[in-house]
Image 1: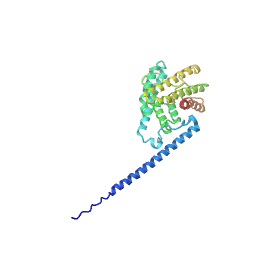
Image 2: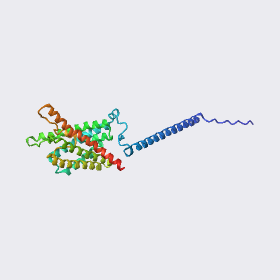
Image 3: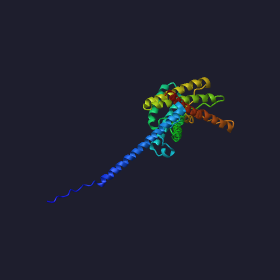
Image 4: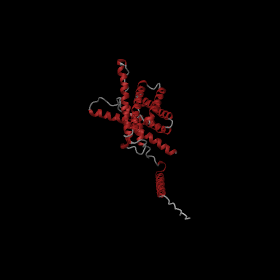
Length: 310
C-alpha cells in the first residue's frame, strides 16, 4: 500500500504580522518611556539648578494655577461663568453686611462673624470666595490665579457690590421719612490722607495674609472660612482703634475697593475742577490702590513665611 506523505503545516501569515506589530509596539513604548524618563530627569535637574541659584526662594513666583488657563480657553468653560456668578452673589452679600456694620456699629460683631463664615462657605465651591479686589489682586500677584481670571473676578465683584448697594438703597427709599441714612465714607480732610491710607494698607495686609494662610486648609471649608473671618475681624478692630485714636472717626476704612466705590468716596463739590479731580485721585488712592498693594503684601508675606519655615 502506498503511504501518504504528511503535509507540512505552514505558520499563518497573520500570526507573523501580529508578532511584528507587537515588536514595533514594544519598541515604541520603550522609546516613549525613555523620552518620559529623560523629560523627568531634565525637570529634576532644572529644579535643582533653580534651587541652587535662588535658595529657599526657589519657586516663589512659580505658577500655581492650571497651565492652560488662557484667554483663548477660559471663556469656553461653563464652570468659569459659574465662578463669576459666585463672585457677584458673594460680594453682593458682603456689601449688604458691610453697609449694615457701618450703620449699626460693631456691637454685634459675633453675629457679623457668623454671617461672613456662612457667606464664605456658601460661595467657596463656586469661585474660591475671593469677594474682594484686594484678595483677587493678591491671588494674581502670587500667581494663584491667572490675570484674565483675576480681572474678570474684580469686574464681577464691582457688579456684586453695586447690586448690594441697590438692594440696600431700595429698603432706604421704602422707609420714607423715617428711613435710616445710607452709610457713606467720611471725606478725606486735609492732613488725613496718610493716616487713612495707613489704616487701609494695614487692614488689607492682614486680610490678605489670613486668606493666604486659610488656603492651606481648603479641604476643610469651615476652617478656611473661620480663618478668613478671623482676619477680617482683626482688621476691623485694628481699624476702629487707629481711626478713633488718630482720625477722630470710626468710619474711615472699608478694606474693600468694590464696596468703597458704593459708599460715596468721591467728592461732589469743590472750588474748581482741579480740586475735585485731586479729591477723586486721593479717594482712589486711599480706598482702592493702596489696599490692593496691601493685598499683594499680605500674600507675599504669607508665602515668604512659608518658605522660611519649610
